[in-house]
Image 1 (tube, helix red, strand yellow):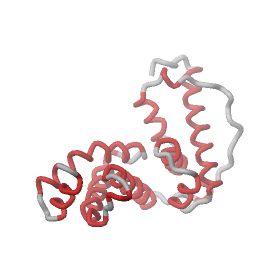
Image 2: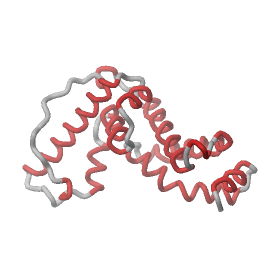
Image 3: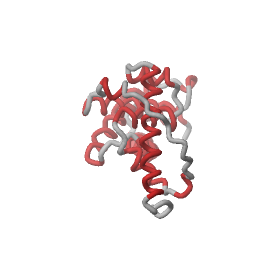
Image 4: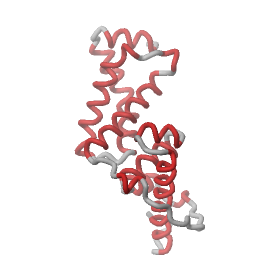
Length: 183
């Protein structure tokens, strides 16, 4: 079934089409939510809110501006950020944290399992984690991130540097503890 037909059926309340759309995009939405470090106890509510927004907003989806996948991705990211703000306000001092000198140590990430790296990202402070995900994973610019989070592009760059520094330190600690590659 093509996207236009699927959307029309969903808008008319066709339960099978709605279920199909939900099942197709659930793993993708869950991956986004988990990447932002939402706890398992909270992810169910957030995913439900995201899909409610998807179904309520389908009449505003414009296939000329992009595909359904990208539209749902944008909705999921924005809803996740709003959810994080509701749980824990991003503190101004955290967003403006100073950047320490970057370590020059190079770490080969191929030695670490992806799940371990995701756990490290989830442990970052909320501001650093949010900017890291938006910039590194989702490809937003610092200007776009600044608008989304209501911070300056400089604040976004600072949070990205902080996230990289913290990740680098955690990975370096694993290397010096002799656990490098055994994670």
